[in-house]
Length: 225
Image (cartoon, rainbow, N blue to C red; front, side, top):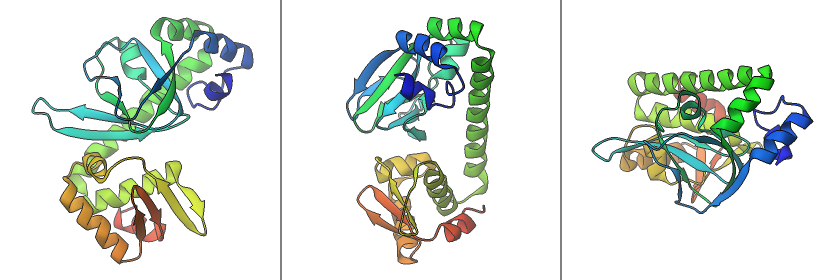
């Protein structure tokens, strides 16, 4: 647990004795693929640190339409906002593969903040990064076409979790094309056509849920980066 916590942005600057106290307060959980870690609207009484696996953060409208805000893997954390403001969960979190997490309760987090100014600073930075990401996503929906949003998404995922191999970047996405479509605010058919067009141009190759980026520079140009 200490090793997993030390790799996170949120807790990585804490000293080992503090990490040990935090580890004692953690509750390990394992979720199977498709299982909800929590639902949009639930009470936010804990956050999680992802130890292994992958989750998607999903917002659902009153009509049942879904948008995937982000996918997260180790050593990322999620759930900070509701824990801090005690409001309802703003989105659902769903395991896309078997996922192991550490649960940290709101009381344990607040107690640690009292004795660690570094944690408060990193928590505020984490919330600020989330706001910046959501602001960027909102502007992309307005200013980029679907192809541009797909290109930008692939670039971002490559930067975050791409695995370099033979001069290319391999993305083991763990999500479906429908999920990719929900991440860019589109439907599956046009997203599939765009991915096929990118593959035909030699920018990417697709192998099931794995995408290999062959020309990252061209993708960046298409995304306007």
